[in-house]
Amino acid sequence: GSLTNGGGATATITSSATSGGTYSALAASTNTTNRFFKITPTTNTSYSGTFSLTFSMSDGISAATTVQNFTLVFAVNGSTAFDGSGDTLTMSASSDFTMGTGNFTVECFYNATYDITGSTNKYMFDLGGNQLRVKFHNGDIKASPVAGENVTYTPSGSDLTGWHHLCLCRNGSTFTFYFDGVSKGSLTTSSNHSTNTIKIGGYDGNSSYDWGAGFISNFRIVKGTAVYTSNFTPSTSPLTAISGTTLLTCFNPSGTITDSSSSSHSITANGDVAASSSHPF
Image (cartoon, rainbow, N blue to C red; front, side):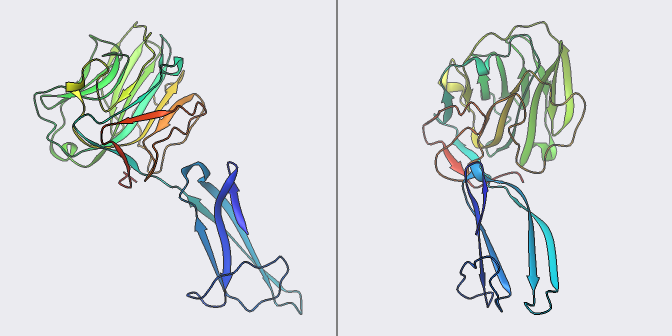
């Protein structure tokens, strides 16, 4: 048979008399000497999920039945690869990217494969032309709710390489920048984020400030909610489209880069930017 989720087949379930044999589906209540089942998940991220499965077996004579219960998690995930030269993701202008004066959360995982201590501004993302953004400059990571307001963190040691989690949260009038779940500073802000555009991997106003080479994974915007209000442990599994999510992208391991939020924004991949099987989980 099959498992379904989100309107499509998440996995097929087949059985065989030998673990390396030819598998074929069985009709319900069919007596068989088969001992092996194979569950083959899809590679379509839209149909991933967590499933509870029950297998029951009977000898067909005494009606004695053995039941086995277990859970499977199908999490198809990846990232978006950037080469540092004209590689960006853009979307049509939308109020989904206008945070106003309300709460918000913008987060992602990243793995920079270039020297982040360089002197050129390198924007990981920018909502609205140097408004809500994260940029790398002279070894610093600068997070800002709007132009002119910054929280700065200078990574060192193991924080300079490998996968890391970044998060910008606004809770009331407090803006906090988290690195790997640890606050690297807060500021009090009354700013009104009124722009409605977004660019991932670059700065909306100047292509010379495109981010360097590396990977961005599970980029999520949650509008209206500060998902984190204190230090936290970043997720060890792919992010989901929780309530208020207006964008969730950079997770496809191959093919077209998509948005799994309810908005289903059409994403334009510029330059050589491409889906990648590399991921932080």
